[in-house]
Length: 223
Length: 223
DNA sequence: CGCGAGCTTGACGTTGTTCAACTAGAGTGG
DNA sequence: CCACTCTAGTTGAACAACGTCAAGCTCGCG
Image 1 (cartoon, rainbow over the protein chains, first blue to last red):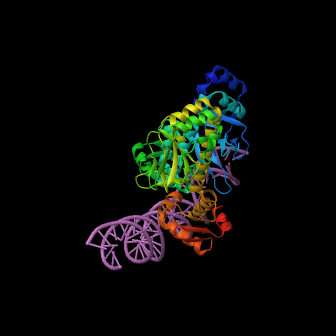
Image 2 (image 1 turned 120 degrees about the vertical axis):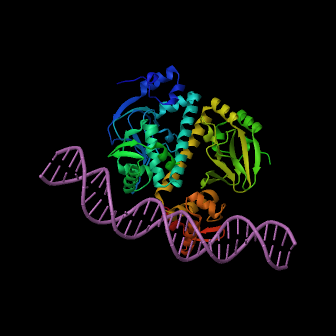
Image 3 (image 1 turned 60 degrees about the vertical axis):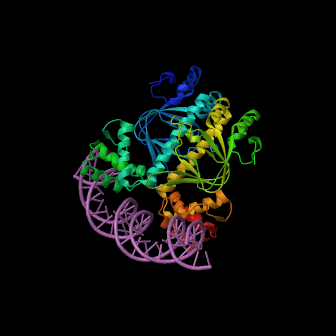
């Protein structure tokens, strides 16, 4: 289903700064693409040609490495991906992969750059977006250096519940192994920690199905 | 010693995008301030009123927390500090403290914002700057999640040698405790790791004096 | 029905932290 | 000038947290 950017309900916030003409220009130059689970949207270190916007579905943003992967975050609709390639290297510094069926709008980076050079409000909005990314990364650095596995898992579950699914019950969109890559722990410890939370009555879970029972306790554990 | 921004040898890269008039405007509105060791330049969570530029000396960028501190990086001349407060919260998301005598230029954030709304090239340069910060944070996330203490300490020493002091011999600008906060290890392990490197002939050290002897081995350890 | 990927469990080993005690050096007041 | 104190640094031993390994299990799918 084709959507014009001017009427897209899931567009990123920075599009609010565009004029009618600019929105039309973006609409004309964008491609809407559907990725299936497991397909690569952005490949780390490749030359940046496009900026991507998630219309629907969930993706994982991750750093690839010979021995050990690292998932930075799981994000969904209205996410803007690839803006961090707007530096002198012009390369993506992470990979993005669909973890379910995902609709993405792909816009040539030159179109975006061109609009930025003519529309300061849009540039400022991009700056705001980048600063949000920096905030997230600062939280991640804190999360990795100051929290134990219980705390990291609790925070992860609350994050899924609050930010991604907006519900106390949800289906984990990723495997145990990927949960491990997202929380920086061994996959065995993902299992053990989830079991522990269940035995303490904080959650109910079966396979990927999760229900948050005791939000307050999880919140305290996650600090 | 008063310097005009147009002739400042240590100014940040984004100033290259300013017109003569804009440089004059910044020069007229900036304050040059000297901070002594231990003095706070930016306080985390305070309302952002200024952007800071380091003219000389070293600062530590850190996140404060009740029980455990976290140093993000040590930076020196030409660093731009506080741009990440250009988001809707308008608060600094970290603290910056002088670790030696530091000369700083302080510019009102409204002056910077005003120039950004009139000069797209400057905004784009700020975007580039922010993307460099993001790259650094991505490296930090990787560093924290994938490297052991030996590897982290080796990387830190090489970073001081290559980036900050540009010399095989240097004097550590921070205490063992702060080294621990920067590498996310116990201060006891900072001591042990340094001793270990010395016993293996990778470095020579006495107090804060360090000499890199076997760059190659340290580089391998740090990956 | 059997295969395989992902999941689960327990035992064990390693890494790194914590604790407690000790040392060295710098600053202070008598 | 010498005791005194205070902080930073150092050391070893005990301990906890977490990862690794190996084996067994489950469930969807051909």
